[in-house]
Image 1 (cartoon, rainbow, N blue to C red):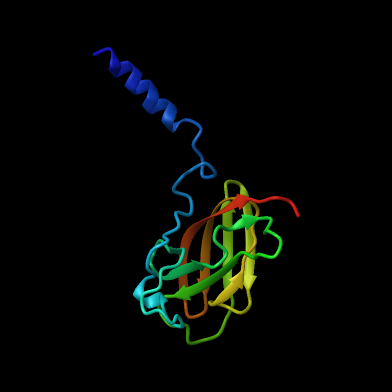
Image 2 (image 1 turned 30 degrees about the vertical axis):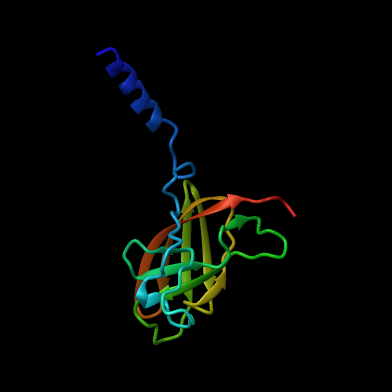
Length: 149
């Protein structure tokens, strides 16, 4: 019976101080098999790569630069392959609005969906993505604090 108050204190403290920066769910990277619709161009029919699928399931960020680091390590980049679930038939830019608390960063990848280098400051970022053909989705990526070069 005496453990009940202690249990309540632990639950309250566990919720205190949590933010998007400290959340363990921020940018939870799946290191398993890519979704079947995101495997075009891979020689392995069932490739396993670090990736994050958009909340709406419309895009996948395949992380060749895993883990993402800010600033990027010397000789290494934050390479992300963006794969849209529906084939993009009209070329156009991939627009990114990234938010981490009150910080907002906009990026435009003129090459559109496909390979890219996306550098953001260290933090837990929610990316709202839009691309040609009416594609839209969002996902979370964590950029770890790297060593200054």
